[in-house]
Length: 404
Ligand code: CTP
Ligand code: MG
Image (cartoon, rainbow, N blue to C red; front, side, top):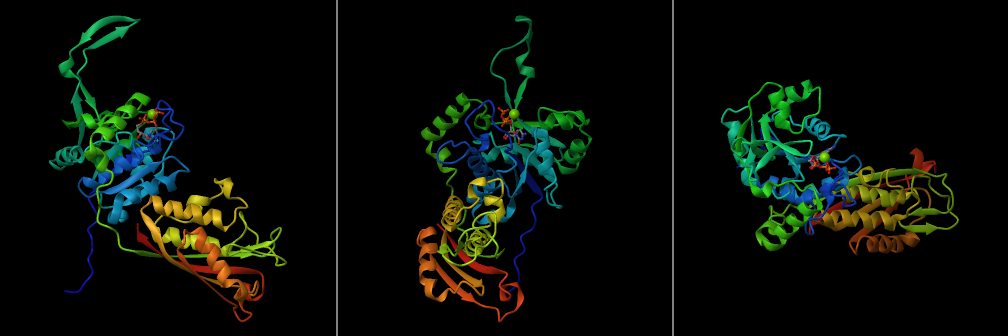
């Protein structure tokens, strides 16, 4: 049978909030990017989300760290990478959830909000929450009974015993009908501690389902130690982050770049210095060939584009040469589970003349890409256009990436 296989858009979405700074953990990086083993909290959380029923997955990352979140997400997603996207969060958890809500697809009917910090939450908790909302509920929250005896304290004195059987500790994912959650967020006029509190304040009754001890939130260094030793002692917990989603097929990508002549110093192009040739202008060295290759590789891997990873908020790349860009790109690809198949790039320029140095350029670019095959070709444009008038150069690259 011929025909196009159209995958239905999922009716469930999971917003994974990962935009917090992790002040209490104080691990020197935003909490979601702190490693439990060789994988970050975010990667662990996402692997488990991806084992739950199929859903759109929106990751809310700290502003400026969207590229890192996407790398983790794509590595976890395998061949389901089309389901994941990343948006920047806000200054409170509530603002971050709101940013995630704005990124939901039209067909989504049930939304789960999950803390990346609850990195070891098993897929079964997601299933229970979805089932409760699916059964006609407005919302459902996983809870655990409170084990400790609870006292009400004022001025360092116990003023009352609190009946423990009335209490439950709330976890995430918290799931809601999308229309209810959207309306509750639009109407919220104060900060609530979780989504259930916000929806309850909007006048709705939220159900509970059984939580899981593994859904604890990593908040303090002691929590992180607990997560690390659990993962170290239980191979199944560690391997959850490696669970094979089907291997993705090889992918191609394209990239172009243009730079004008008029920069300072010598010309750098295709990873080579060209003494005596006019320089190109740009944030870095203006190497349009290298930048086109970076874009082609990132596009092939679905990792965004050069601005995502090397934008002006990465001042370390100001003035950098091809090797710095290409080796970082290779690293990003590796983290996302790709290696470079081959790269082909064509330069349109009157000058410099590539024929005498083509092999040298290919060798330099290939070395920077860990030995992958790079073909460089060059053409003039018969005097036409800005390249023909000698105002600048243009480069067009294609790349193939294969699963590593
Ligand atoms: N979160 C978020 N945006 C914020 C604050 C928090 O997306 N502005 C997310 C966190 O990334 C985390 C979850 O909400 O996954 C629960 O928050 P919490 O455990 O408090 O994390 P942090 O705010 O990062 O930690 P801390 O309060 O210690 O700074
Ligand atoms: Mg916080």
